[in-house]
Image 1 (tube, one colour):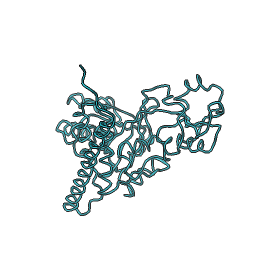
Image 2 (cartoon, one colour):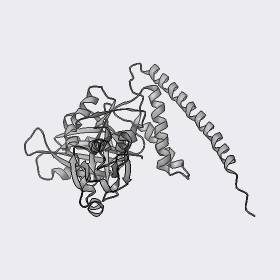
Image 3 (cartoon, helix red, strand yellow):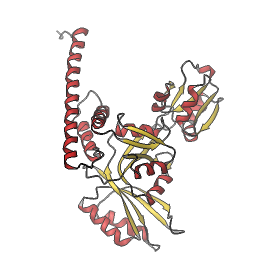
Image 4 (cartoon, helix red, strand yellow):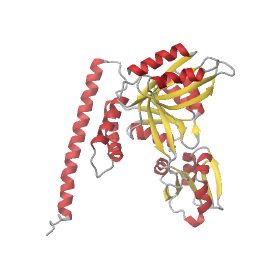
Length: 364
């Protein structure tokens, strides 16, 4: 004979009791975070940011490792991200500059990495994001660096050549496009769709199959498309979840992108180096000598010391005509002995080497 299931009132009573415990523990954690801030201030009265990228990465990694379900590890990690964001805001709210406007995928990446308690500030250009952080007007910045379908964001790479900022983290964001409309808009009345030209291209097959005759209008960003649609009853926008929430739009269709694995990688930029998290990357810029075998001389130390490259890009040098610099990402932290060995060896092999920083790999 099977065991009798509890009644709904009994289950709700259990949930209420669990919620009380969760509530008490969250506030207990918040009080502990406030004490951490007091200790840090006592040790360094000049401190302005209590955010530690390596510590938060370690916490999220532990959350996912110990998770036994039924919630997915990433889902639980996102909940902890928001708890940490709220606790950090009690100590000192983070000011985050990002490539705007509000509602873009870069905005979504900033919220994913820092949580909704951070103060996010949209900037018109990537250059402005760098300048805000350099001037101390923002603690950190968020900029796109590469997309799995469209390739590298060259302007971000170029900004690193002349900037003294460090990379302190990365975010990987799966790019999901939705067909959004204003409340009350009916499917049969849609005569045009707004979006950024890249998003229109990324949803071309879906649009050809479902809306072959409607006008497709390219605008400056998906967020701008959402803003325009908010005031129109005969239009739709292609944009992400953040834009839908920001402008109060209804999703007619979700995940309409032609490539469901399309992902954009964003970099978190700051002024200080990041200690090891245990699962890190390092990024460098290398200017090679103009000689035969120059690229081999750069790559050979990585192979010999067992360091895996995750990305290599070439950009024209801004100082010498027909000269090029290499942007290299590889696994490991600059404090690890084998990484130190490779960096020291590269200094002797290249014309110039710039260390952009070591930082935790994207966790969620």
